[in-house]
Image 1 (tube, rainbow, N blue to C red):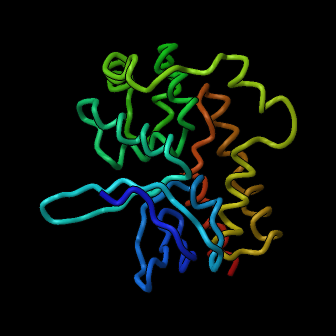
Image 2 (image 1 turned 60 degrees about the horizontal axis):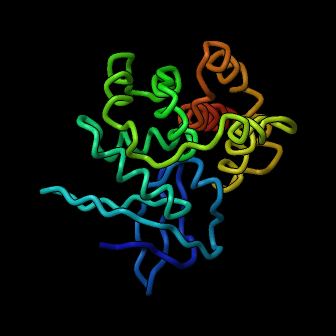
Image 3 (image 1 turned 60 degrees about the vertical axis):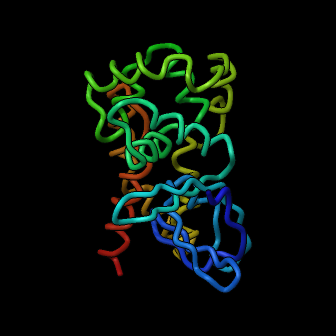
Length: 207
């Protein structure tokens, strides 16, 4: 198993990072949150999980070992493959997922693309007690007390990491803000992966 990759970032896309390791470019599938923390040409270290299929070898990358562990534990639930597990981590942090599972929060899980109400109920039952101890509700909510919403920072950093100027990134974030606010008003969370795709579309139209 490849436990991690370390080296300069050779290229970035919304869901893929290429890390140069010993002269070889390793393509690593990542969430937008992880991509947001990378910069082309700068050194990076990603915890990784190798998924082997009959016709493919796919390397998934994470900001830290805890995120990788949750990615692997999520797949112990029936119907959860690597893509859905990564989508769950693209919407929620490991601690947010732990809190959702331990508190039986269906809405948090249905905020993930591909998970409906029945699927969320089934996952809550199967994952109960598997992801580790959940943080207290107060600790989970504390970071949101002040400053910009976390999703805006994640999205702006991801766009800048992809090579866009700060002003372009800010304008694109402003353009997709109504979409994010609608999702939050419906009782969910801002869907960063979808927002990133929408932001990129607005940037492509203006270029």
